[in-house]
Image 1 (spheres, rainbow, N blue to C red):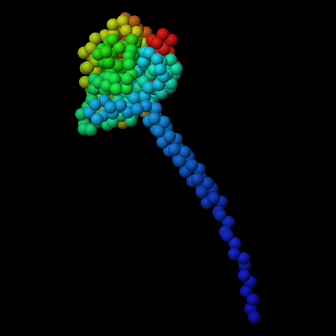
Image 2: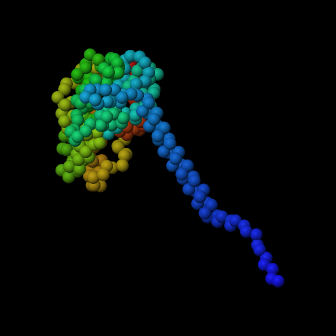
Image 3: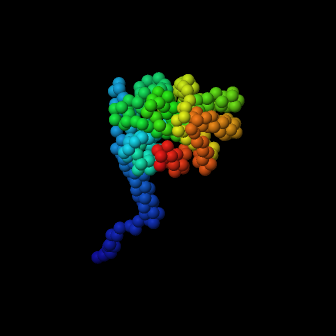
Length: 301
């Protein structure tokens, strides 16, 4: 009789490489889920930090206010921004007085406008006026505008002079910037740069907006602080610009911008012009303390 010896069946030992791979995948998935979860939570917090206000025609504009007191500080964002980059400044100023920012139409949580019609800063001022009325945000106001947002703040001040007691311009766009840059650049470089400026997600007609501001007067003796970036823009170059154009723009822009910022400081007989040497275009994000100090100087703090 033949006897067959049976070996016990055992589970194969996992290969170390496969085990390490599974661990790596699990770690990556945990990171991805964590990042996505944080972003979703962050969006939730941002959305609940304000409210959507009807400005007429069924459109709604997002506004976020914090703090109490008077005057109220209004923070206006730059081109293709949403206003949330003001949060650090807003948190600090809220300890002293009421401070609000909005997201202009087509940006942030505010409604998108159907169609391809471009808007101007006068449209933004109309929306802001409607928001302040609907949300019972009463004046007087200290206006703070970054980049192209300075155009709308100047328009608002011109149309509501009795409600405005001060203004801070944070590396603000000058109404003659387009003309000055066109004169300083070659035709090819200007064509590429102008295409970048006019093709913005906000749908803003920058030349028309500049013309609106060029048609108004100065600020008289309104207390004014002009903050100028001391560092050149360090963001990645926008698509559609050749290296030659980038080099040409970087060569001429600092001198042109410095002249324009000095001219902005001349808008009021009661102005302060400060060059923030260690900050680029987004001074309120890179040196929020400087912006906070400028605002508080107009609040009497």
